[in-house]
Length: 363
Ligand SMILES: [Zn+2]
Ligand SMILES: [Zn+2]
Image (cartoon, rainbow, N blue to C red; front, side, top):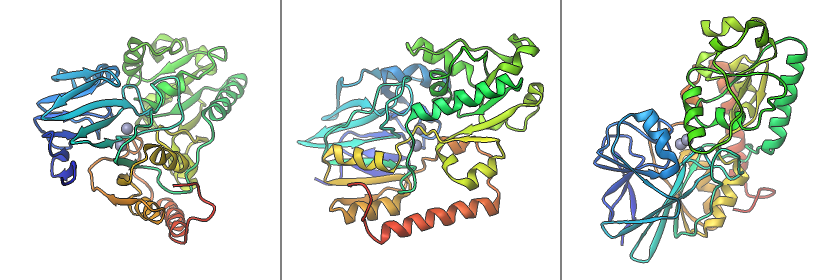
């Protein structure tokens, strides 16, 4: 039997099943890992997704024909047994397990290994072939525990509030924003959300995720704004919407904040290194836990990960996809100098991988 999943111009295609996974062009049948824009697009005839993610899909794509599948539940399509398993990335995110003729493939979508309060934790699924993302697939990417980052954010907010200054956090409106909200300390002051964030909060609450009380900026007294924290999408940075907050302190929450150039490019006071993707050790532990002998790497640092996995005895290759990085979707265009410095740092990290696995985590 040939590969169960191949790349076609429409997207990843399950050959025996006759369906696509997160296709980037309109198709008849799509199985969707999660509702970020680069994975869940308009125009498919039929969508299959994890039940906890159906609300988000509908809120973003409108009236689509979508079937929700509980995690672990199985459907059979053209002889392929399909089940969805938590990916720990955002509400309703899943890995897609496909079984046919005794062979098992798993497509990860985007995933994060560290659990958080806003979605089901990542579940390792045994398989023969694992299709993994590689957004942060370089050894330089290592995250501090969420608790530590959130403690720093609450302390920063408290300090600003005590000095009578509003705190603004730029964070991707679906996923990152709710993850931050779930951990903020509401005793410090009011929590204000941008109009792009609040509809997603509603979907999360409807899905049973506990979030503190949030308010729209129009609902809050101007004097109270000086103790407030504001969660807003990156695209609102520098917009007229920001003017009402007066002399505010701003920050950006993203895995990319690990890179000095990215911090400078954002021009914010603080960078909080908080990602909804696995870091390098997370990718390695997730891949190992699948027991897969073949690994196929998608969007991110494909050549580095493939080289590393091959050096560690796995059969690895890459798939070219049209998935992007949802955190950069709302990004400002990068300035040349700072961007090339980050590129140099990434190149150095790739070089280190090429030189050998010493001192790096197990593959
Ligand atoms: Zn995503
Ligand atoms: Zn992705």
